[in-house]
Image (cartoon, rainbow, N blue to C red; front, side, top):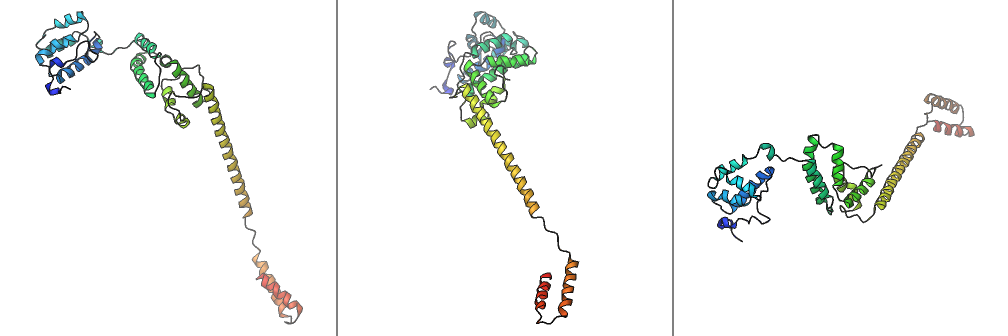
Length: 289
């Protein structure tokens, strides 16, 4: 491998190679082109006096090459020449403009690609947002249409599997409707799906199996709720009975008990200890006390 400090302009990538910093005529790609070219030029120690001439090699169209070559500063004054080239294009042209035609082209291309893992889905999501969001902001693409376009840009198999998950996780889900652009991502990482132990788009069950499974899960949850309600009702009933059982009895009137003791004592005073009634009254007195 050639050390960066020993590289020369001869080590710059060939204009026809895949890694070469090509410019194909789109003004909005101009900034990206300069950044990539200068990165290579720095790593290959290209002299400033040679930069303009070498940069021109990576311009794809001959007409553009002739125009750039005519800009003041070429070939020796790179920065002056570069600023002149940038001035050939208006700021409006340099902005990354999107169109419905460009979005339609992307959707047509994407729907043919299978989504095999979660990163495929998130990558599609990012690219779609990049194209569609400016159109939505400008009022060109209504939100309902944006959701529909996102949905039909997914591979048919992916739509079927996402629909199956939405049917299981969302009550009364209508498979005929297009979900929002966020919902496919939500079901791909939802805790419900994780509990099932499925990897994204690796379902081993068909749509009907998933529906039945979801119905069973919901049935079990409803049964658990009924049991909890019954247990709570029983606990409330036991508590009510316990309170009723433990309610203390009314206390005996102390004044009446004291009068009984006085009466028994008076009667004992008039009896002989050997009298049979003496023992009976004595026991009554002890009981009252």
